[in-house]
Image (cartoon, rainbow, N blue to C red; front, top):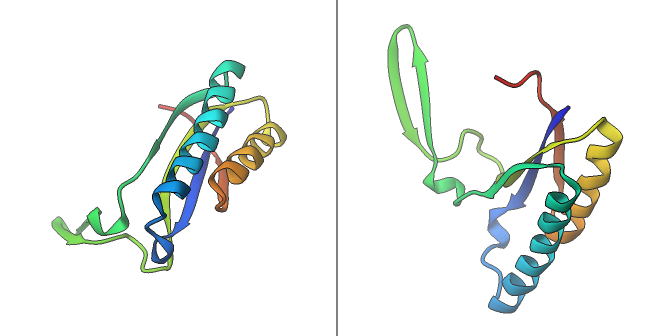
Amino acid sequence: MHYLMGVRIDESELPYSDEEMEASFARVGAVNDEMKAAGVWVFGGGLRPSDSATVVRVENGRTAMTDGPFAETKEQLGGFYVIEVDDLDAALAWSEKVAEACRVPIEVRPFDGIA
């Protein structure tokens, strides 16, 4: 089964110092390597800040595009992983490692099918 692990960040706490970023990259890189070695890694990546987002809406046949994040909230999606594991317990075990490495909350959601 495929799971999304969303990395939730508070953009008001950014940017990190160079030392904090180096330490974070090392921790996250180690977990990424562990997931790849275990064969659960499908895809992952960081996202640019939410102010780089564009929201596209279509209503009554008209398209509207607005700058900024979809939701106006302090926490934003800062990155994500897609993993393939046997069950939710396995996904939660990996999310615990990611949360420890990233030092931010991780939202875990199962996919409702893969196209």
